[in-house]
Image (tube, one colour):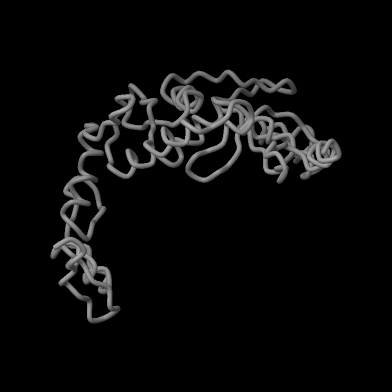
Length: 231
């Protein structure tokens, strides 16, 4: 009957309703992963886990969202995606509407929220046409493609060197300027590490300073303190 769990682990006392789950649990105690992927070096405790992993190699996405039709390679990614729909039904407009339904983090705008959610779902929709790599963000794909095309759009203003990636140019610029506090996203030089961290939040959308009274969040503690005076 429902709730009946006849398979008892004598090592830790946990019980299971299915024999497969019980066997996987026992193997976990021993550190055994008998189900080996034939295409890579990963191994799993259950056949089902292996089968879900093998889908990643085929490129198939068998798990579809009933609400929007979006498809995923893994069942856990679909479960996480469903939570986003549930939260969207109750999320208010404005800054609080850009809160991650999975971890609660506040993002600056819907675009930043969309990119952040892909960290949870594992979704990487931007595939390289030259190799098997794929990316969460289109900007990362564009940067990667330069490795194949040989394009070097980031030119040093002090010498004739050029680079395919902005971080490479930034590291090079330090040899000319001696300025170590450079933004990893736009190359801007800041006066100290604290100012650099605050500046980088403009790019990432991170707003770690949150008002407990109304839920508004800010990139700087000083902005939060100024806001709190309005309450």
